[in-house]
Image (cartoon, rainbow, N blue to C red; front, side, top):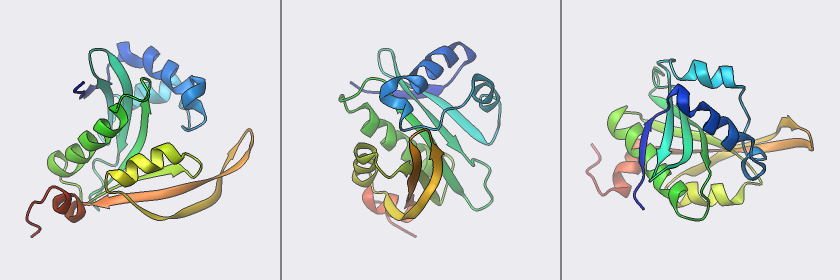
Length: 165
């Protein structure tokens, strides 16, 4: 199934909040209140997107679209239909959006160190680990570490076998 990304609308917020708070996703994301999602819809520095197949299958948040260093943060991806390849496809679309539309030099993210499934998807998509923010996140179960990963425009071009200037 081919997916697309579309701008999140206010009518999508119930879906976004339900996806974010579901037990299969909540352990891996830093949840936002509804008002924070609502603000993101109109923030010119943020792209809040729905991952769309025949129906909604997830959402994505990119931040730093106006970053003077051309570094975009892949802040969030939540996929509700697991095991169908939507996450892999969505990461590919995010890379295209960051490097071809927004002309980013760097696309980066942080991922909980124990989220092996997500880390594998990012690695398959050309992201490299830059380092680990050790026990930087206080959760109900204790402290968690975040791995910082990124891909650069030149790496993306090489991956697509485009000439690198």
